[in-house]
Image (cartoon, rainbow, N blue to C red; front, side, top):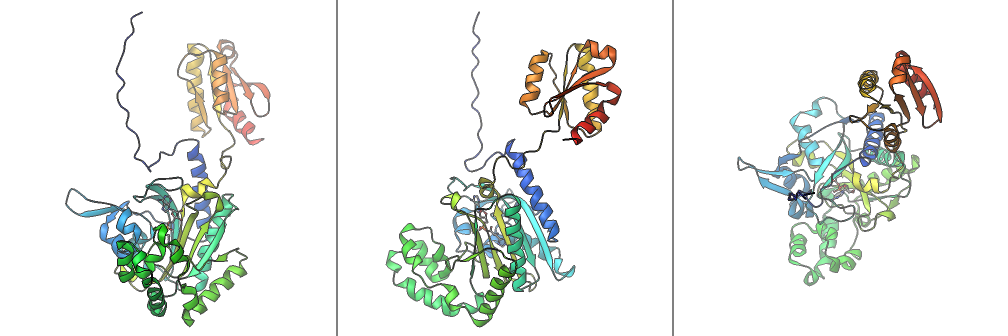
Length: 428
Ligand code: HAM
């Protein structure tokens, strides 16, 4: 036989750090998203969906010019009209932009919104660190009350436990109000200036422009210096101290386990007062799988009214590293028809369609195959119920029904198939 050699065309791969979500992973994702939606509902949050692309200045103004995200991690480009646009690196700035644009403050004093979706950061990909990743997040705006911080952290804790994650820590800190940080910043700058010569150009610039940002420098050479720096928690104003004490009291009232970590600074400029992260020792270097905090000035920074806010975002990929693969796999409820012969196959198509119109999950094959191979396929694909239809069954107007879970076999009149399937699937 002559061999025909056809040249294989080069295949196209996804961009590094941008993953396909494929089955059965997608089932786990859907499970986690469904739990999140249900809990957001309980806490009275409503969904918001904002565009993936925004004007670049939204993030420059919202997140802060000196942050690592804005300086190095944004997917920013000129669109065909010559405008600078950016793929959203996070959700909070976009939500606040939308809230101002649609005058949410006129609807009610309190605005509670949640979102799910992809975010983009040009980081070096590694386990738990992607360039397109997903967040489940929420924002509560219109209250500066400490109990609002507690509610948001309670929701976060509830959500993470609801998807089966137990081995994590809620770490909390207070960064004080921006307007009341002067004394602390002074002390920080005095301390950091001693080590100025150890700093790279970038951190030296931050020291002048935005000293808090030196504290989340990624320069390993500064780690020890940063570990010895004064912390905000030691210089809180009395107003911030009162807020902080109430937050801790609220967490205790709700019996939410937490630890105070005065080293949390968060990587985004908008935070004031409460800042928190969820960390897990199972995650290695990228140990924070959620983060959030209070932002009192962001709405005004973006041109809106005075409206304090607090929120969080969970990194879904990191969260899912902590969720067992067995979680959220649905019990098989599906029905597969194996048929022999053309007439039976046509009847199988009709029956499958009939099942689907009754919203039962049903499938059959398109090609002629032996019963044995059809049965093997149905079993492999995890179908619970299998119908066998041949010439004899057609004549008698019945189908042989096998239940792989119960190990039961029966002959069911074709006219009663959908009701029988529905009953069998109910009695687990
Ligand atoms: P963030 O800490 O920058 O906060 O991100 C939240 C979570 O997103 C992180 O804890 C992490 O799990 C995940 N994440 C961030 N970057 C990556 C990445 N490159 N790959 C995988 N996962 C990543 C925010 O984004 C704030 N908007 C949260 C917030 C809402 N604060 C107030 N409201």
